Length: 176
Image: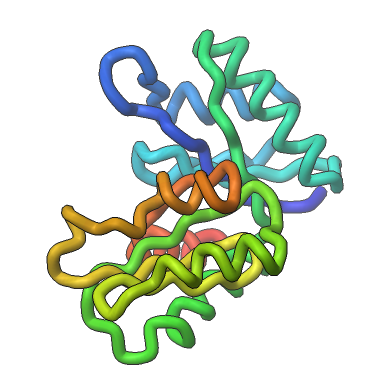
């Protein structure tokens, strides 16, 4: 059995997209995955499965979540090693940055052209750094008015979900 960490996109937003972590765990177990754990109510789940194809794992989870909730829940899966690398990249990419640090987790590996497009959106106040299937967004003190957001990442690179660096580090420490 291999271990994976899944990140659910766009849940617990408003009244119609509720998906409590206990319900997430039950849906993951219903697919036949084991060793299921969740962390806070933002859609982070660890599990074990005999499946090895990330695409097949994501599809199985997305089908289960749709059946359980009645709405689509894009799901992005990483191995523990990939999650550790994302957390380690944070130190390298931050390079003394003292503002807010968010990580957009990507469903697909971006092309060189896509990476160049997101890097072109960087400015003195807002910087994007890509490592594998993760985009590190380094934002200034006025982050609520940032132009470099997960929505921009999705428009340029495809399906993504966003977590702050504190959550990424906590998950890497807890589950990797």
